[in-house]
Length: 163
Image: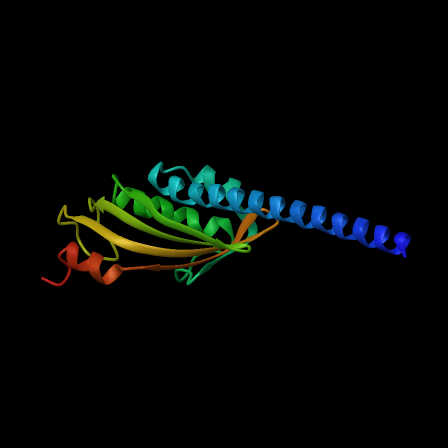
């Protein structure tokens, strides 16, 4: 009986140690994923497409993707170039960042001053400040999918499109 109890005690203690190790790894993943996601927003603010190469998986998918854009990381770089030339002072600011498993959810603000035509609308030199919500999914330590929603209706109003 003593041998049985001792064996059971050792097994339970080993299980607790393994559970603790998994928790530590999960916390490390959470911190790593959150740090990686911040580079997405820095890439736009710093106008640095090389940051995207560091964080995006080769099979990255943009949902919804802009019509006619290539799949993978190459598809986002023209958009980054367009947004940062249209809004040279473009700044993305993270307001909230949450993680559940391999997905990171970000609520951010996108602000800038329109200096060139945007979506065929001429520049009136107006500022835009809209909310952005993104969900980034990770695979193998990189972002494999990004679902995004921007408040473009508010942005177009701010740019004077409906006047």
